[in-house]
Image (cartoon, rainbow, N blue to C red; front, side):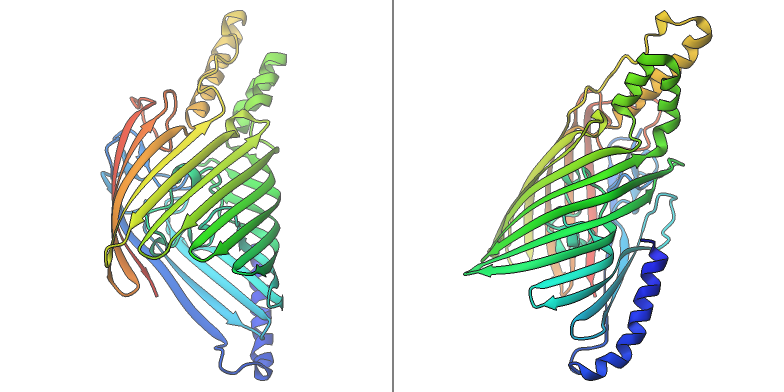
Amino acid sequence: MSFKLTTITLLALSLYGVSARADDDANTPMLSFSGYGTLGVAHSSENKADFNSSYFKPNGAGYSHSWSADVDSLIAGQVMANLTSQLTAVLQVVSEQNYDNTYRPHVEWANIKYQLTPDFSMRVGRIVLPVFLVSDSRKVGYANPWVRTPGEVYRVLPVSNSDGIDASYRVRIGEFTNTVQGIYGQNEIDLPSGGGTAKAKDVWGISYTGEVGAATAHLSYLQSNATVDAYKPLFDGFRQFGAEGIALADKYDLSKTHVSFISLGAMYDPGGWFAMSEWCNLDSKIETLRRSAWYASGGYRIDNFTPYLTYARVKADVNPSDPGLNVSALPPSQAGFAAALNAGLSAVLRTISAQKTISIGGRWDFMKNADIKLQFDHTRIDAGSNGSLINTQPGFQTGGKVNVFSATIDFVF
């Protein structure tokens, strides 16, 4: 489903809703507007690579900028249209650093919701992927205790929405509220540095959220057929070297591969303090995609101040190095090309994140609907990996340690 089709449909139904609202609850506003934003800066101790909050951003703090405002800064606006007592539409637009280093706004959500019963609803359009505890608010800094969601976990599945349909059903059993959601759709994202696109087709999944008192539990499962075409020329080159090259390409190529994702999460927040944890696993026949991650986080609220601590870990189920083609067995006319392919493969394997991070920070709610946060991250990167660092430069050493300091102001309106 294209964004153009979604927008046209939303506009058409909004026109219909102007007349339809006359028969519905006049106390509910036809249109409402809200928004959120973050103004932030970050500094990284690594000066031969960049730290950023997303794989879809081209640079960040470290090599490109000693202090970067691109890591966390964004502004977003959302329009909600109450078309009838059962039919609503939402459009959310976000401006943040894009793959091409612009801040051109993009559509995060654009969907129509029909409430068939008080507990059963369906949506069509661009919809959030319900795979994490804070999927709905992963970009809303004010809604979360940290400067940013723990990257070790949330980068395992960095895509935040899909174009398609979903259905949600809620059941209350005593004090327990149980919500089951099913989703089907697709997604396409442009990659930085001329890396082409990442596509996910036939995305389908199911999630469960259980709530009782101050406790929340979340479980999700997702499947998709994924393609990342950035490495297609590399693995097409490997396939020119017969069975050995084909085997290597089939082992690592990200073209048209089936992936599955599962996550578990729990949170307890009685008001004075909070504790939460999530675990996830991404699986595929392609070794470069296999990984698992988890984090645990907690904080204590002292009036308007909340200190917090987080530990996060991501591990990749792949050897960080591969000798590639046997160059010594090739004639000189082919050996140079094969060596270049092997170097390209090594570069790909280094981008697979494997690291652990301990974060300590504090949040100060200094005024209504706004906070200030300071956070220090100490990351130990596994040997042979770039970790989550991007835009690596000559002289960068894999493994090692990185410190990141971040300061943000979050607000909602």
